[in-house]
Image (tube, rainbow, N blue to C red; front, side, top):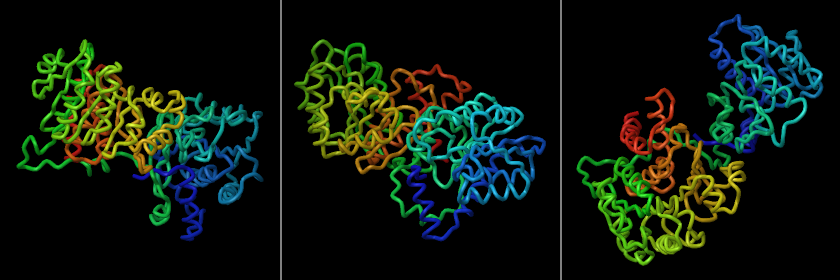
Length: 514
């Protein structure tokens, strides 16, 4: 499903209202009906329950006012306006006027003197509906509004947010000083990026994407660059497995890896490539460590390389380039070290590698960006935020504050697909498109997990999946492995990277079947 930033959603609304002549008040009413449906479901339709509706002065507040009118017919509803009556305008004012005409008893609580009253209403309610800010919030929330949101969060009551939890930046998912923590969020027409980037994802709870009657034509008039990488999309890119296929049919992948104390990284990458369906995996490793790989991954073909104290010599660059001609994809970096000769090897190889390439781990830490920019063939980078920060010359904090923008800019600048790992992994493409992953579990946060991911992506590249989709699909499969493992342990961690590998065939099989 396409993602729409708050600015893009505003443009889509404008097109719907002005070009297709759909009155904004109809869209607001449709939004409200979806809020009512969600609220009723959360309370199991029990009419004895009490609801507090908290509305700001904008369209988000208008959605809340419109929802309140319907909810009043089924539940006991207290309506709080955080704006004076005269400060509410447009379609929102229409629904506020209706409530006034129905003698709904709207409470106008507009400054810090009202916080105690608001808190009392909240505490006496079973459900709070958050219609304070919506997606238009920018800057830090302070003063009265901060007090109200804090009261909501400290109440311990269930919360339903309208469109996005108030205080979450709809572009980045960052908290604007303080934000409502919702159990469920009903967002309209298209999901917003901030709902799927942390901490926004955590604050949003269960996300419902509701149709409010915006025509598809209005959406098509806006250049939407983001998309959710969910099962429906990812299933389309699974590589075909012909019945008469043989090991050569399903790709040849070489993993360039290894240094003293880091042999496990390459082993995991190779194993995950096999588990993802690769027919032939080759391990290019330090000669002095080759026996370890032959024992731990006996299915792989090992290329022993000249080394110095367990570190591959850069004199092997030409040999690796020659061997890569017979490959369908190469993974370089897991467990390589950052020795100067590794730096020379990596950059010499990246410059001339004749097949699609995944650059991971230590290879990222010694990578020359100018070499990367000059590559013509598909390249995938798989940095975690710290590695990405070093590549960009930023701090990790700066990266995490706007992961999508930073990843897209870097992808365009380097002509490489960038997989910015972390919860809500962002895959950014040189054409400006980006994808946010929807699978995953914290049990994946274990040593070697990234090596497994690089092997999965390398395998998919080797099975001739285009680089962007190989990256998205690889991240999705990796995340689903975490979910499968977590389900076995009631959501608990304690798994190793090798166990992540073992779950890959089951995840891929489920994706095919469903």
